[in-house]
Image (cartoon, rainbow, N blue to C red; front, side, top):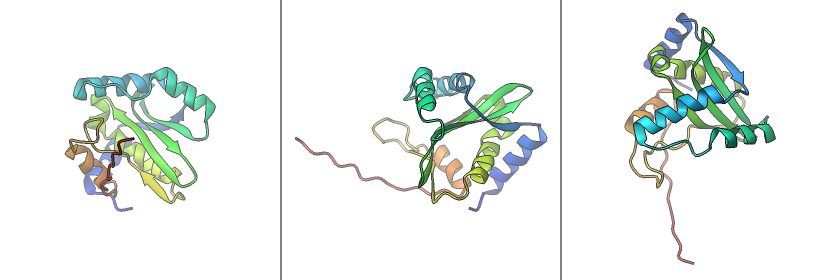
Length: 161
């Protein structure tokens, strides 16, 4: 997968700053970051509550993974993955303002792509701003394309029953 220069620079910046990536079962710190970002930027909360994602992870520990970017003991960002035999899906991805400046999302995906390189597909998820699938988030698309991703359009059909 070919990465854009801006993504590779983010990885180098985070590494130079001493950011480490670790797998974790402690979702609370990341959920605070994620919830704050989603509420501030879009006026929404994550689809799952902290209690729900913790319960899901406890029931499917091999299929729901949390990668966190950590510096000096503090969590700067993270990515929650749903893993199946065919697809690794990024369900949630977020960083603190400091984490964004340091490029922690770039470092996280660098590690994730290394750990899951044998999988046929990686799904970054939707890039829309509204629950109904409308409102393309161009900055999010730009970020995902920087990792070598490409956009797909989904057809939505509605049937009256």
